[in-house]
Amino acid sequence: MAVNAEVIRDGVLGMGLRGNPETGLLRGFGVILAINTVDYLIEREIAFLKAFPTAEPMAEKALVDAAQWCANATFGGMMKSAEWAGLIAPMVKTKVDSLEALHAVQNVLGWGKIVGYEIDEAAKTYTLRVKHSYYSKNYIDNHGISTKPRCYMWQGVAAGNMDLVFGSKVNDFEAVETQCEAKGDDICEFRVRQKRALFDLL
Ligand SMILES: [Zn+2]
Image 1: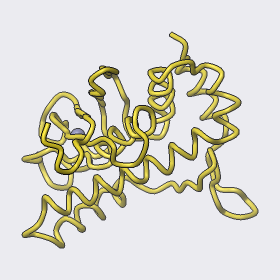
Image 2: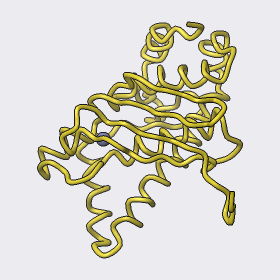
Image 3: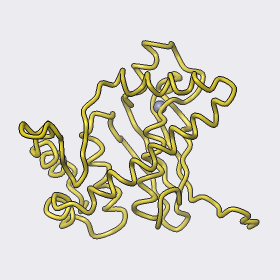
């Protein structure tokens, strides 16, 4: 394997991702990051959904879309950063290497762990499997077992990974969460495909 996830993990952790004493800002990978609690991150999403009780699917789509835009901006910024050029780019020879490098970075952000994936480069389909998604335990603790998948951020990130590596713009790809630990499944699974163009009749 060309991409050494352990080297990426040690490199990212070695950056010391914490606020600068002078500015109070946490800059890394060409973007500004912030550390927040999972309770805050998830409960604000749930409060957002509750604000639209008659239009929850549309509100859920807005959450996923926001995450997908954020993934494109954040990881797109990372892929153009000096840190990426120095640490990761030398390992990356193929598009699949880029995907694996993104996985390695995403696995040290406290979001849970990507434990598997499948990519069909010709069909442009991608399946991502995550254990310990940060939504799951929090959701169950606060709201009980969910009746549907809940990992809106991961759903957007899964599609965003494909936008960045196999697409040409944000929202080239779309994801669905087909299994979710928040609803009692063993794992969270996301399936991603390229969006059909509007009015595409093929
Ligand atoms: Zn999930």
